[in-house]
Image (cartoon, rainbow over all chains, first blue to last red; front, top):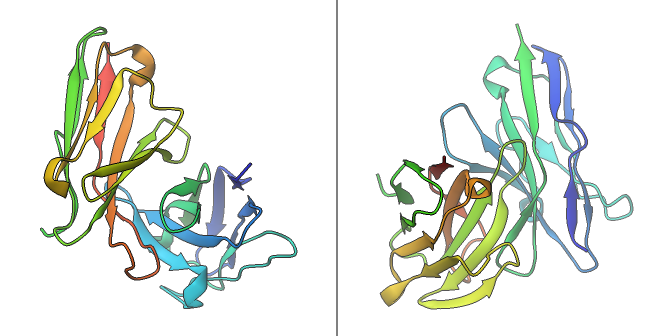
Length: 108
Length: 115
């Protein structure tokens, strides 16, 4: 069965420290993977997608098919990065399967 | 605001009542999705439309739930005989089939509380 696992419900780091939000997936085909972010009182918005191999707001994520992972990383956390982060897998070209999310708190 | 909009933003109802939510997608988007999110969980897929055709329904969508998208524009999600377990955030998203890498744009959600 297709599944996305985010093992950490909460991750607290100090400002300037590196951040890694973990995401593992289970999927038999070729996945499309995304990271979505939800800032306080805002809607879900796309942060990154694996196929673009881009860096947004200093975040990067690499798809590791061997480890079935798509971890989100940032070398130096900023207070404005505090938010809820969801990893999502897309089946074909439509619905998403989301993980349970990780709340990132960046402490001053 | 040209993003996805949802109404109402909040709905409180008594168990057994019917409720209807509306979603207006981004105007040129032909795909529309409904998700449900409960506390501590990520959004869970309910159903999706391409234009006016409902192409998939999750097993989460019991017979009490019905969704429509007449004319392929806005969509409604109706829950009949609500139960306390229906309390959740209901999210709508839209995307453009064949568009940029399957990015879905989400609305602000409708929070349903069933008393």
